[in-house]
Length: 275
Image (cartoon, rainbow, N blue to C red; front, side, top):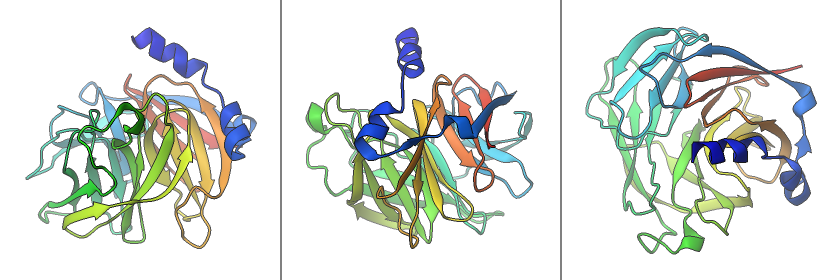
């Protein structure tokens, strides 16, 4: 199964995205370099965020310990942070606000059967971990039919007091990716889609550039870039598609307004540099 997955990733192209949505192919504008290897403890890296010390946090996905691992850009393990009052049901991505608060997306939902999902809000320092719970307002059946398996998520980022979630569509026929907006206040919320786009590969991570002008979606085999107008997070401004066949890529972060770091579940770390 892994061989089939690897072949599918290698042969993934940007042509369908250019034809259907107007993306430009941007491979020639970027240099992709392998820069390190994650420590053995982070053997299923599924999210990445900055620390306050120019290093990074990462974590494992479903079944892992409720811990964040601090690493440098080469993958050297610097520290471990246990998240109190949390469990790792299916941690899928990390987000961060301008004050250093971390948001852990415990919203993996492979079977589309969960009626309530969670984001852990981890303030800097020793403040208590808060819990944001939510459900999808547009989901009526648990699980839905095979053509409506759109209630899984592995990607989100913070922007202006909201978290923006991007669905991982598991339907074999319906390839729409949806954006959901979730407020960052503690409590429970029912969220509805605010925009959608057809993408042929599953979205596994997302991030927004520091200047707030671009966001990126990581998928199995490529990275899709979108412009942001007037602070609005939508799919209305597709910018570029970068082919990125680097195995099971699950985590992405902007390190400046153009360059990104990506990790995969084979413990590899890549830097994508605009040139």
